[in-house]
Length: 398
Ligand SMILES: Cc1cc2nc3c(=O)[nH]c(=O)nc-3n(C[C@H](O)[C@H](O)[C@H](O)COP(=O)(O)OP(=O)(O)OC[C@H]3O[C@@H](n4cnc5c(N)ncnc54)[C@H](O)[C@@H]3O)c2cc1C
Image 1 (cartoon, rainbow, N blue to C red):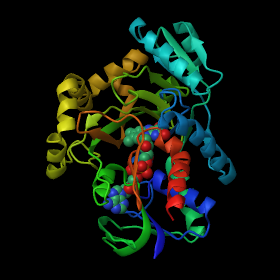
Image 2 (image 1 turned 45 degrees about the vertical axis):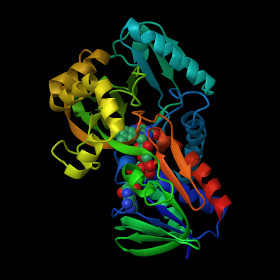
Image 3 (image 1 turned 90 degrees about the vertical axis):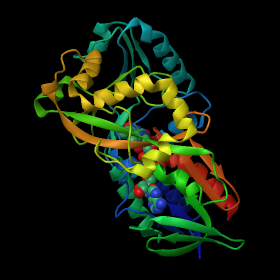
């Protein structure tokens, strides 16, 4: 029998196993991952940004884990020689109406412990950092960086294999039998018996949580984020990272420009309802999953309140011209011809029955289970800190 069974080989599951092994090397761990490799879903399709902790409510799990995770991630990458670049970013208010929230963000950043934030009080000041940007005010955040999170996961995988952790790919968890002595996890590859089960299943974390005694009253709503890439000749328009002031009503940061660690530059991601939890293309529809989303009372409340924004995002998803128009707020000279279609990622956004889109990380536990049911951005940045917290809970249960 294993001590711990981790479900999900994304960055949160791998970081959790890594932290358990660091604290308690003799713990026997199996990781079950339904795909044939690590990081195939959220982790491998994200923006590749190392977030600094600017946006998050002081005291929230996001704020504390982002700063702690940021430092742990950089230490890990230095030790394991994984490339990253702390290139800094600017957040840009494109008109006066956005400046009040920009000031709130700066205050939050400082409360969260960020130092060296610089207020940029004119278009000229913004253009010293990003010559092609347009705006009235902004903040320069020196701590923000870029990285390849798949490379981080591959290193975590290798470290875990060296420490005799079993990582079983092509292993979809179908059910869990909970008895007094053990948990029997039935997966597509066989049965696995463990003392403690940790659910880090991302887009299916609600489904897996419902296989445990704790049945959180939430549903994962999949929001696809689509990217364009700047063509080779247009990459000079972006030096590093350019973000808008986010809409405080939504848990997403808004379409931004991101220089990637591999040398590309992305524009995106938007946020459209995906018609399948792993529907990376608009054409992919999973009818039962879509019906489940549409009939969830929480989603219906969100849709009733924000249908206009939702349709706007949908329109921009189908119309490149509309997407470019949104980008032109930040960079007037950008044209459709500067962009080619890029990839997409899908956010696992937990939505409560009452219509709340959970902003903070949500972790539910009982005697033998830990369910990580909402680990949205910046959970890749924070992964080693989330893993640290979850590993403490597990070690206490063993
Ligand atoms: C578009 C986008 C941009 C983002 N940008 C950033 C960013 O720049 N910086 C940042 O810090 N964060 C960012 N994030 C957030 C970050 O990527 C996620 O928070 C993080 O990757 C979550 O990791 P995870 O391990 O929880 O989920 P995942 O990476 O989705 O991993 C979950 C794993 O569980 C597996 N699984 C699911 N069900 C089962 C089952 N039944 N049995 C076995 N295995 C199962 C899946 O196959 C998957 O591999 C972004 C996210 C998206 C979608």
